[in-house]
Image (cartoon, rainbow, N blue to C red; front, side, top):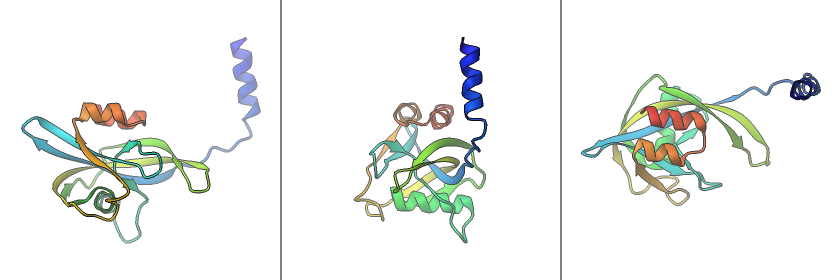
Length: 152
């Protein structure tokens, strides 16, 4: 019975083209304290869920530079050392203002925070907070990001 249902499902959607994933860049912001590593999470503007700073690639900037720019705008990271190669990727569904969602693959750039500012472009739109990687993994929704945080 299950085999028949799987085949029917596959036939029903066999003509549907897969939707191409859009690319984003993300900064996994961290610091080292006496208690160990901590990662910086921010809340999303729409749902208030915990996320890492991320956004679309930017014309005239490399992907790691764009990730660092997002860390500044969304979390107030004014000084940091950022890796030039991504440490991992995670997939998620990005909600658009139209109400639709698009699949996104976000490249994650490891970012060691040297300074946080009290005022920054999105200070009134988001909350930011430091967590242990294990705590952060429990707070984010995306399975691949959970794994990145646990492995960190």
